[in-house]
Length: 157
Image (tube, rainbow, N blue to C red):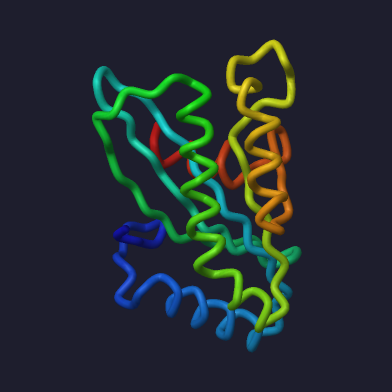
């Protein structure tokens, strides 16, 4: 995956190293960090675009994020697409979790899945929650899942 900052600047380091440098830099400035990882997708005709974000939240001081996008022509049902979003978030969370443990940074995986059963995405809620919690990660769904439903959503829309 090719990662960049919100302003479009490509990360010049592998994402794991860039995340570690960001954690070190921000904690040296005195900020208490929490990291939220989420993915959203948008279907446009035959293409599905995915955006995965790593959101660094500085307690009471805003935040910043790293972003990766890609597109596929694979057709998904809504449930499959929701679970692919979760799998993408878990993949990056798993790659980075040792850093969060090393630097004592709280991390959550956010799923763009509605907790209201009236919404189609709700079909994937039980499996997504089990997948995320089973990997040992903290889980948030809509409306608390801002990394996926707000941050990543802005990238694919």
